Length: 540
Ligand code: CA
Ligand code: CA
Ligand code: CA
Image (cartoon, rainbow, N blue to C red; front, side):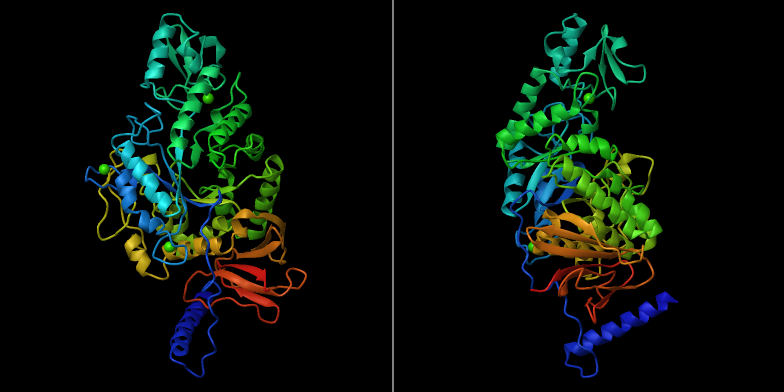
């Protein structure tokens, strides 16, 4: 029933647009797109719309079926052409590259040399060129830095092993977690070297650094300086969850590393990976780190997907607001890091695609319009799905720029990638109703309204309907009211009173289809279609 009504409405709207275009008399005037003509300003601070690139999988420039730096350079104009008010680019203004250091794995989280790049991806000169070309367009780059573990093939670890086998523990061995076997509980994964063992939580090929030693910290200072001096804008810190152990206070170590990086580069941006509960995340925010990924809201099992399946939007916003106040209590300058999925998780389109592209667009509204930085996993903006769920490689398949010309990059032996339902980048750029164009609009609006990223959720608005969520974002006297309609089927009409916002006007709307009529407040009321969002602001 609802469906046929919305189809009729859409058809009527197309007629309205066509008529108003040629001066039709009977059609009511179309509501102007509130976003049109508003100036977008490029970010010059740490608040960014990040895009995660799995380096192996993005773009291959030389036909060896391995993604590389030159490949990424060739796609920079797609990512951001340098003009926030025009072009056919996605508009992201920061990149997180998964590890680029020499390593024998395709993912390269086992680092053999922290001071170089893997030849599969190019040379250091190629990397410098990528950095230069990205910066030219206003794109920052942060590198994935693996400080918890190392490759067992790294010369430092090989030397340490030789010393340990000879019974010498006060040299290179101090860099790593070498202890007598009875030091660890029986369920701690370890590597055995002579009479000693080294902690290795991730793999027998990934022994762990001893984060508590002066020697390690000197090495890490050198590594941070090497990349920051090169012009890198910051780091994504891998496996922060494993920084602490019996002798190492993980928060103390993280604080030391944050302070060290800031001494080298005062405006460095650091974001850490820890998928634990709120209390551990809060502890780590006490280190002063800029960001930690908000895992609880992400993934197919996280809060955004949970509350989208029950349609309980007001509940989700309650959790977002409480998270915001908790974490800002630990670090007043904290920048939330929201995302839907990353390289370790099933692609979010697997869970959303059956609900339709409107659901994919709406999930994007929810995480992208939360204060802080958003992290979009490459391919998410075109609705790429994972063809399997039993191996990480399926979450890391090559980016589809053109669905008529599928990429041939192989990922851990997997070479089959299928075109997303809406096509590749090339196809979706031409389709004004595509998921990609929806993402482009979201980023544009965030650049038009800097307080979305830089503000805090100061309170929630109860509209007396659990499926409708409302929250206020405030920053330096600017105030926005963001409203989401979590219903997949019903439009919702809500009242906007002077108490909520004086002289409220629509600042931006995010509709399931561009064929939907733009939103307006009429007689103190606004009607949101199913799966739509709106941002209100007092008209000056
Ligand atoms: Ca290549
Ligand atoms: Ca642009
Ligand atoms: Ca560790």
